[in-house]
Amino acid sequence: MHDPSDPWSPLRLNSGATLRNRFVLAPMTTDASDPNGSATEAELNYLARRGAAEFGAAITSCAFVHPDGRAWQGIGATDDSHLDSLGAVAGAVRGDGGLGVLQIYDGGRIALPELVGPSGIRGPSPIPSARPGARIPRELTDHEIQELLTAFGRAAALGVQAGFDGIEIHGANHYLIHQFFSPRANQRTDRWGGDVAERMRFPLAVAQVVREAVGPEVTVGFRVTPFESEAGGYTLDDSALLADRLAADGVDYVHISMDNFRRNSPQPEDRDWTKTRARVESRNPIEAIAAAVAGRSAVVASGGIRTLNDARDALGAGADLVAVGRAALIDPEWIDKLKAGAHSQVRTQLPEDAADIESVLTIPPRMVRYLLSRPGWIPRAGQDA
Image 1 (cartoon, rainbow, N blue to C red):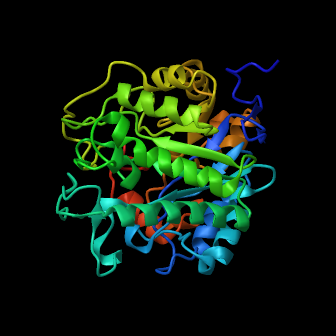
Image 2: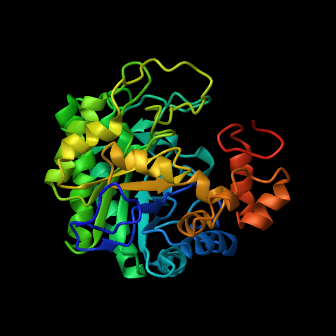
């Protein structure tokens, strides 16, 4: 019998896949692909170095399922033209014995205008994002929603064809699936909007088409923001209801997207961390989501996992897996050093020089610029306490 609080113990998922430990390489925005959605050499090198480390699973940055849903310059999974690129990404991220997972998404109303076609920004309702300069999206038609469901299923099938072991549906961080679940973004009066049960119709439909596309032996996960801190947003009770339905429908894991698992703080829509949030949940989202799924699906905790004690605390709160992002950005060999007991050798800050961030840590130049555009989000020598 394995100790569930031991981060080095294996875990078997509903799909039958067994992870060699409880550590997952978190999906991180690279903003480094070619304009057509093909992975670049710099992006593949970034993934390969971290995929070679001994994570139980590694999740890619999110791949767009529709050209009009691109929120940044990332990998695509729209049709066969992306198959070779996806195959290269799968090979890089799987490493030696890890589970390779393709994350798929659509940006909805926070897609970048310069990357969107002539039909323009679209979303559940004609309500702009809280982000500065956001445009008013046009409301998706029922036919377009059906087309998007088809696109999610097609992207998932492409991922499996390319060699991925699993698919993660990005239902968090204010992208399209999150928007459909949010009463702030979704004020439709048809079957795709209304109360919480109706607002979860699209997220659940995406999970269904993905499962139908990949079959029962492929791992399917769902990433969720546990609550919206903005006024009028959905609550932790709402996301627990969604997690319960996802578990009942057979997802292998629910991935809780947070900035810091100890502070109960999800990503704000406007990305301005200096503003006071309208609401903060007193309950730990890990405990709430774990109680909702009740062992039917694994729970992945994320946000601020930097040490073994962090991992143990997250597992102790009810998580089955811990996703590691910033720590693996700063030190690509983070997990290998921890396993070897070389804790003192773990790098804890980005280098001060931007060129060193790129060369020493194998991070694509566009990703370096993205990281440096968010001061304080990740420790950096000479600039962060």
